[in-house]
Image (tube, rainbow, N blue to C red; front, side, top):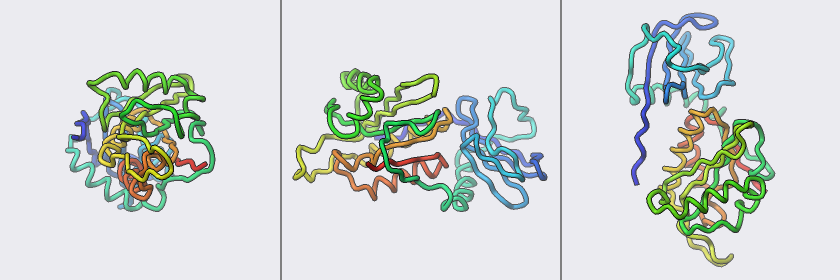
Amino acid sequence: MEEKIESLLYYKCDNIDFAKGNGQLFTEFENGVATRQINIINNDMYISSSLNDWNENIGFLLYDGHIDSLDLSDSIPITRLEFEGKWKEGILDHVNKSQISYLKGDASLPLEQNTLIIHVVNLLGLWGKGFVLSLSKQFPLAKKEYLKWSNDKETFRLGEVQFVCVDQQKTIFIANMLAQKGVRKNYKDSTTYIDYDALRLCLKEVARFSLIHRLSIQMPKIGSGLAGGDWREIEKIINEELIYNKIKCSVFEL
């Protein structure tokens, strides 16, 4: 399984007027939308992938608009490698501020508008136990689209994600992540059915989708129930693929 190549653009400007001074700006664009931004002023670095992030020295940390409306004449194109290097510097300062939020309750009930609910589905085309029961009760379309997808031999494979819009007005999406090879037969079945590599690929795709659509993410403890996965390993992958990008993530425990 290979990571999908995304079409992304990166720019750097060394002369930006922020709210309280002059500094540098690094921006990642996907399809013309700013998805991640690095703001540097007085040797302080502020990173963001959310339109809600604000700082008194900078103002809002992420550009809300389209690249076509920007004057990039003072900016220079940079590589993804250059951007990621700078982003990693910034993420170290936020490691204790950007963590998974653990909550009690039902992950199928959106906490807010602009939300992506993610969960793991299996290769067998089965939808009938665990979290999916609650999910399809709230959003029957998620089940309908998954069952339809399971008949598509071209795209129904490990590492793929199906995004289903279940509420256009509130911008609620479901991500059916194909990362599970089977289902536990009973409580004595100790087989690990989750495919960690496939899960990582799914979460990479989920991250890009969430960034470009400005979505928060919520989930049950994915892959650790009927899929038999180790939550410590799954949590590590979530941190590396979602929290790394400063995406707001909530995990629900019943």
